[in-house]
Image (tube, rainbow, N blue to C red):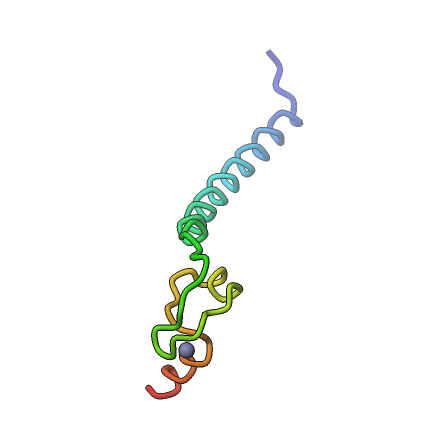
Length: 77
Ligand SMILES: [Zn+2]
């Protein structure tokens, strides 16, 4: 069977694509671990007791403080 240049290029491109695919999958898995943290319906700030905005919970499901208190704590370091 004759292997043309085109086939070689295809194989190389496929290999590169597979490598990218594997890398993407790894990245996606890493991201998923964070994405799949359950987003709580609501949570009160552990510092001031105010409701933490939903948008903030979605962005940082693990957060336990509202933006104000978080910033205050970081500023106080
Ligand atoms: Zn607060």
